[in-house]
Length: 396
Image (cartoon, rainbow, N blue to C red):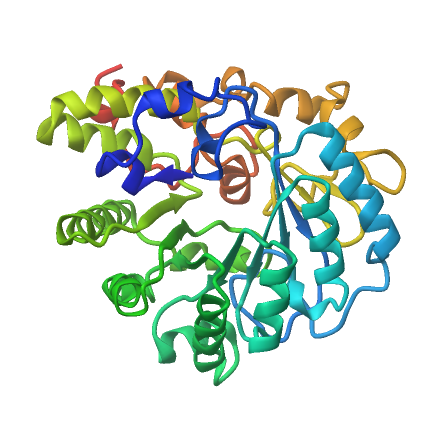
């Protein structure tokens, strides 16, 4: 996760994170990525059920619940363990988390245990009553997925009317006084929609947007050919940087992030080094704190059936099940070979990744994407768009 507004527009200084000692338990949510202890943000896919059929769904969501879902009581026991372990944030996801009737009960329980509780939703089920319930239980944030304007979004969501329903969900969430953000997955079919998303932030006074690079997982496994070319990825990031700067200069700054391609960090730094060398030095310090991809360390995933994964996309390798062992124990067990390597994957990446001068900042980027394309977990991430010159291996 790269905080574009934090870094490019100077919304965060290195001293902001240092003031809190860089400990996850003390940091405000907008500074968590700069923590030193990297306690995992946990994505809990509480259900596989979903009312939509998104073509890039990493969870292969269905229109019915899985019989193996953790019960409410099992969920509360899980939350107890996460709270005791020091997890700073629990993100309720799915499927569609609001399709599970006990979501408010579970989220309320998490808040009562001191966790920051957020949800990732398609927004279509957020009625006024639901939004007020989420507000009453102390939900910190609602991320609503949109992949463009009506025609594009409904095609990706596999349901006519999904855009209109999500817009109503956004309005209801905003009216209830909950922070809401947009979640947009970039690919060749919707990259031209990015300016429209920024206009929506202006027009609806939405404070946050996350732009996700495509990950080849779940139903998205068949979308490798639909990803942007490396050159077009650079152009998309340039566009996001420019639109973010425009909002800042207009006096209506928003929190803008890019997610799932840590090439964005060095790329942003290299651009700033030309535009504002003094700010670039501060950004480099913040990127070093961020440490790049954190799958298996600073982010983890628990499935509806209790299986534990390195992140929400890496669903073909489970480290164990919370029905058998607590998440905290599974997460710290480095006798599991892959878990051990993910804790310090920079030692194991190969090819241009192993030679890259930005390895400490990027963290080796997305291992699951490398595996999807090459079959090798430790191969270079094929979505890295930095040139050999930019990573310092030209002529090597």
